[in-house]
Length: 204
Image (cartoon, rainbow, N blue to C red; front, side, top):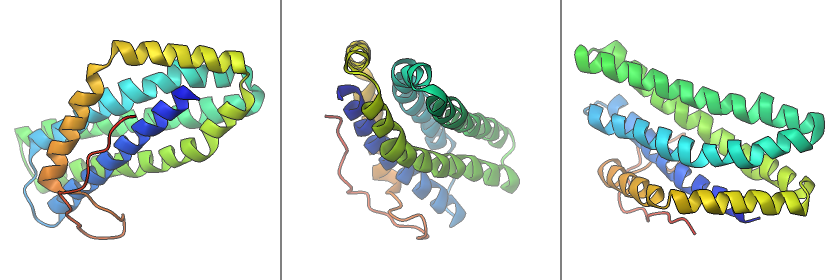
């Protein structure tokens, strides 16, 4: 399914981004500088790549068909599962933006904690969310949506990708800049692992 392949490739990029976000948070906790502009880039990436570019395709093209056509299981899986978690991700970004505004006006340790909490909470939630989509939601849709519906979804995603062709390059370049500066955390149980030479993830 073309559309699912595109979304899974975006998942790879987002997971790489989340590892960088974790590294940013770890370095602040370890006593490093909190660079507000860099955390603003986290918000930018989250809202315009992870949400508008990626979640937008899911919500408008795939999930709405699954909810409409796959009965109570589809409704529960999408409306009461995936869409709730999308909104929780947006809530983390709202909290991060609010904390950054406060920190820039009056930097203190409590607001710094709020920034790290919002950013790392986002990374934790979205990492788990992506695992559910890759292993449960996408396979369920591919298996149960009819061929005609799948073809329609694929056509809509192709059109969307053509209209937003410049977006991935912009945000993958942003990801690379942040990764070069902060590295990435490879395991959520490690304290700080800096690997700035990690390869760039490309969309197929």
